[in-house]
Image (cartoon, rainbow, N blue to C red; front, side, top):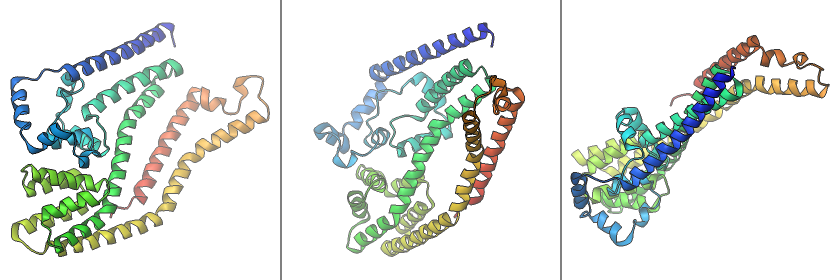
Length: 354
C-alpha cells in the first residue's frame, strides 16, 4: 500500500479517536447539565405528587424495584435521566420501529444503554476497527468484512441475552400461573394474586408482575397494563394469559380454572420442546463440526509442515499459495462464504418451529 494512503488512514484513526472522545465528553456534559424547558419543569412538579414519587423522596427506591434496570425505573417511576447521551444525534435516529424494539430488548437485558446510543457506539467501533485492520493487513475487502462483523457483535450479544431471558421466563410461567390460580381460589383478587407472584417468584418473571402491580397501583387500567405486559414479553404463552384475563374482565368466568388449563398446556409444550431439542442435537453438532473442520484441518496441516522443517524460502511453504496469493485469498473467501451458508442452512433445518 502506498505511503500516502497509509498516512491518510493514520490521520483517520486519530480523527475517529479524537472525535469519539469529544462526542462522549459533549454527550456526558449535556446529560448532566441539560436545562429543561418550562413545560418539562411543570411536568416534573406534577409527577412529584404521585404516590410512588413520594416514596422515592422519603426512602429511596422500594426494595422490590432494586433489580430493575434504569430504563424500567424511568418508565415506571417517571424519573428519567436529565438528558440523553448525545441528544442532538439521538433525536434523529430514534424515530424508527426497529430502534424502539431494540430499546425493549435492552430493558430485558438489564442494560442502561439506549438503542440510539448503542447504534452510535457500534458505528464508531466499526469505523475504528475497519481503519486499524486496513493499516495492519493492507486489504480493503477484508477490512470491510471485519468492520461489518464488529458492527453486529453488540446486537448479537443483546439478542443472546434476550433469548436467555425469554427461555427463563417461559420456564417459570407454568408455576407462576399455578401460583396465581391458587391465590384466586384462596379468595385473592386479581391484583393481590399479581402482587403474590411479584413477591414469591424469581426473576425475570417477578419483575414483570411487580411492574403490572405498580402500574395498577398508580391508576393504570388493568386491561391496559396487562396488554402492555403482553407486548413487552411478546410470547405466545403470555398471549394466552393476556387473552384469558381480558375475556374474564369483560364477561366474567372462572379465571382460576382457565389459568390451570393454560399452565398444563404450557407444560406440555415445554416437554415437547425438550424432546425436539434432544432429537435435533446431532444435527446442530454436525453443522458446527462441519463449519470448524476446514479451519482445524488448515491449522493441523500448518503445524505438521512446520514440525517437519521449514523450507529455506517462505514461498515454498505448503500453505503459502492459499494465504499469500490473490487466487488463494479469493478461494478462501469463497470457501468461507459457502461454509457460512451451509452452516446457516443446517441450522434452519434443525430449528423446528413449535
